[in-house]
Length: 70
Image (cartoon, rainbow, N blue to C red; front, side, top):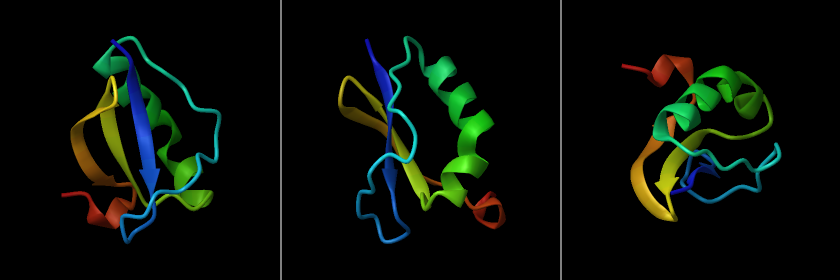
């Protein structure tokens, strides 16, 4: 299984990854990575992300804006 992130603008349109695309062997590794890198992604124009497992959406979109966290 490969876990990856899909990055989007606020309107849901896809954006090119501003960082090298990574594949993770577990969901936890993918979630830890986004927890460590969300500020950089936001600074580079990513507003939200979707978690994919082997190309199938697991959840999202998840906002990277701190004021949207609930």
